Image (cartoon, rainbow, N blue to C red):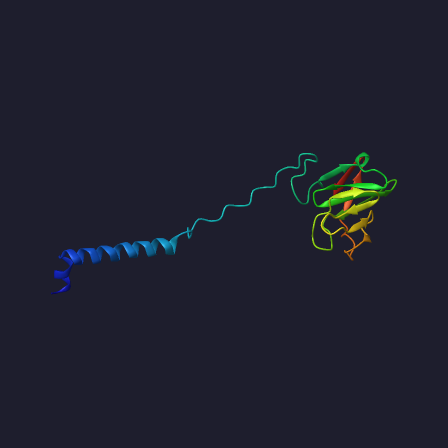
Length: 151
């Protein structure tokens, strides 16, 4: 029986149909997620609610008011710790503990405290109690009037 004759039999139709389905499936798999459209551009950063900043190179983000930072204490704002070790001196530090990468959780009794393993840091970022052996990383801040900004 020739190939043309086989195609006209019931078995030939099933085999030919199965081959067509398999070819279509392979084509679909090979092109899935491969559209030729250009990627969407990144949206512009949203304006900062407090400072009106719209992104890097413009105004810095407001972290706190100077009145919110007690002398001998500090606050944690996102990834930044802002302290006031002495009146009028403000320090910016990373909130990431240098021991195991946890985020410090409180500023109390003159130390910045990490909840994970008990490390404590002075208001200047220096290690006050281990297991951390490296100070908190400094972060640039600016005092502008009564506002403290990242930057």
